[in-house]
Image 1 (tube, rainbow, N blue to C red):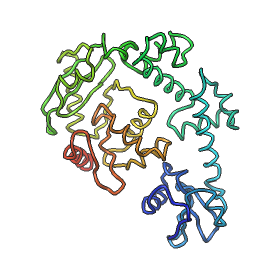
Image 2: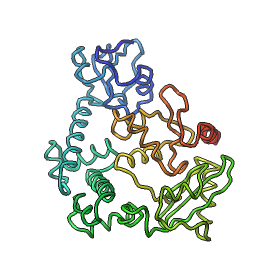
Image 3: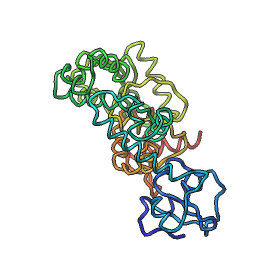
Image 4: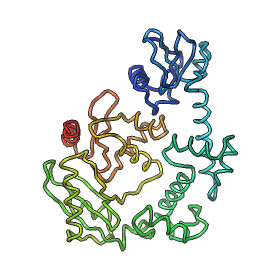
Length: 347
């Protein structure tokens, strides 16, 4: 096995494993050159796998072509590179825009048809351009609310009308917009602590869904997180939800429709969405998680987003391990993480 002079952004072992399982999450991170056909392919190429002695790895399309290989006509890795550049440019345009950028204008700016580019963008980021723009505006609003009045924050974030912000905030944020600027004031959060086989577990929920699930925490910790919310212990309706939460913790990986009320940046929410796609009994590395979210170079940021998850088990951040196969860190200790993985592998 040989590689080009350009260093790969991952280990040779990880690259070959991704190629063997045709992992789409690694497309764009490297290409595979086949000496017997003089072509280079994406890791996910559906073609029959070549013999190991006929494989070379290259960090980029340009490196592969410098070695004398041409793009595969089946998986079209040259188009993958073009798609990646187009998505990166579109993200920049969305971020620089003062208001919503219509899909037809965005697609034209990067040289694609609107429908095709919407699919390309969604495949790379996990959301459509419109959804990405909405998430970015809401993220800006949350940041602005920490230091501005609500009306000012709405306009700073790029919302043309306050009614649009309040409509989207109710859908996505769970709490009223002003609550973000004032420690949860006016929000009722019901909570309880139960002794589970993994230790004492705290769960808390707004009217929309679970906003906190943790181990070894108390009302004091919850109040630190939501200092001005109205914290109410127990309650008949919450007791039914709490029983479902305990069951999900005792048997992790069991399908569940428990509602959540969690908020993060656009990037964090993409990472959390990818976490929920990991099948029970399986794990992913931080690099794989970043790649699946469409940001293969943001491994450290993916790790931070993973750690920012506020609802343990329900968003399974415990399914992420280090590239060397070790369990890695966990907010509630490695012992709990290992036990959760063990239970899921035995299902």
